Length: 315
Ligand SMILES: C[S@@+](CC[C@H](N)C(=O)[O-])C[C@H]1O[C@@H](n2cnc3c(N)ncnc32)[C@H](O)[C@@H]1O
Image (cartoon, rainbow, N blue to C red; front, side, top):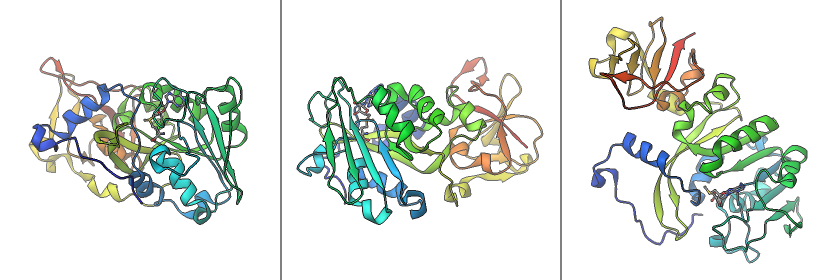
């Protein structure tokens, strides 16, 4: 099933005269936490993982994944909805969802944080602990994370993404979360990719829903530490000798660092070279290449810095 769309507000990229990369950069600047994830994006990604990943597991949705008492899907987070509707098929042990008492009350569930728990075949129930904010870093949420959760799954607030990633990764729990595409080449997250503590999931997330349930462009991607069996997107990588890479897709910056784009990757280049987020998302690090610098790389071209990259090298 999918959340009903009232109207499509965003014109196509072509209509807006924008390239995908411009949208990507724009989306990065948008500091708006208040977007909903579409049910179909959750279904598309989560259905890629085998049932053994979910069987007998406690799933924790900890970023305002509200659950409506009357099963109103417009007042329920699509994450909660997906896990409730597929609880038996996935063989889940428990589902725990928290509601955040933020300034904007996206799901119209009142200002008080709560914890919704469904244990096995029992009906789900809510508790409203005193002084509980519903924040992912509230002491009670952290207790659930550390003591109860097996898999964390949500779309966290963009404004807290750095701290959220740290919290989840340090917990050692499995996770499957949505973040901005550029996380794959941003200084705050690169060390996790180097340490193989996170990798891209299967899909990008191109649309979110606003509080009016209107579509809005997104530059999201799934990130996880759950094993990926096959990576269909790796077919997008064009790994070949440097001299075969078309001239328009390779150049050197002012530091004489090789820049390649459009997922062209040199197979015979001994030095470090710079790539965008896309090859990382498409599985470059699983193809015998590694990130060699733990900070983003901003290539100077004719004295200008116009885009961000990460430095990689053939192992
Ligand atoms: C991108 S929205 C996603 C909402 C919902 N998880 C979904 O996917 O539809 C991020 C949500 O996190 C909430 N939020 C903001 N700060 C939070 C925090 N510290 N702890 C938990 N949730 C928070 C926001 O209010 C917002 O509802």
